[in-house]
Length: 116
Image (cartoon, rainbow, N blue to C red):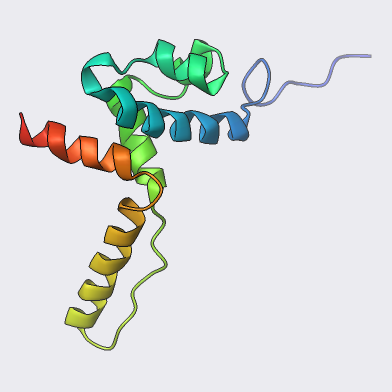
C-alpha cells in the first residue's frame, strides 16, 4: 500500500504560540538593551525557543522588530462622523496603545531614531 502524498512543508508545523512569544520578547528585550546589543541569539534565549525558530520567520533583526511593532497594535477601525474626528480617534487610540504595556520599547525607538 503506497504512502499518502505529503502536503505542506516537511518537519514539524510552526508553533504560533512561539511566534507570539518571540515578538513579545523582542519588544521587551529591545526596550531593555537597545538596538546595538539586540540580536537573534538573545531573543531566542529569553523567549525559550531555538534560533532556527527566529531565523525561519524573519530575515534579520530589522524584520523581527518591524513585525513586533506591527503586532503591537490592532486598530479597531474608523470611528467618527467626520474625517477629522476619525483621524483624532485613530491618533488617540494609537498613542494609548503604543505608550501602554510596551512603553519602554517605544520610548527607546524614539530616542534611538532621534540620534540617527
